[in-house]
Image (cartoon, rainbow, N blue to C red):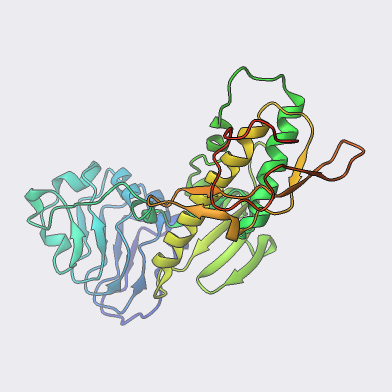
Length: 317
């Protein structure tokens, strides 16, 4: 049983192993005066017996995990002289710390009692960048594939249910529920290579199966790479546009039982307004899967600009 790890002044120059979080009997951890880099692992929230935790004088990046506020026995915490950023938690043992454990981290901010910069963050997609792992309910990031998949899912589901009296898009919101880091590790067997779908410039993608048997793709970002947060923000913006387009396709077919596939829904037919909200400008040619007539066309093929749903009442579809 390990309760003390003292690696002070060892000049270690790698990332902090996340497996240290499995040492639940660990009381003291000294990793100061080295060359450690990368983020503080989220798994450290499992170190329930931790009293002394010292990461000072390293090159750590990212934020201080909010989950550390659950370490109720933590008395001595020091991350000074690093490159950490974002807001310092006010919960748990953190409400008793002074500003000394956080010195020389230019990006950190917190309450006035810490004598640090005050935090001024807007509720935007950039705020959600604090999450280290983004679960995506559909593996592909291509707009066309995402739109077609969501459209078929919604129409087939409505086919099994009775017609609702008024349109609603709550079904689209339900798909994007919050999933904990523990759940992500569980459904991927600890991000095992057997569940690896692929690798890309800023990280890897793993396959997972949630409790409701939904198959999801989980994208893991490498925060130490330059430009990773810009890539994350782009993913968020793209996902919001996908939801807007899916809502537009769901509107004219709400409660309609016959599956419909659109042939002309593509990025060039999605218009963005000043608030970056997506609008479908051309529904084009569609195919009804349950009818003998395989192709049915609208009366407004190749429309110029945007026509709001309901503006025309004589569509053939």
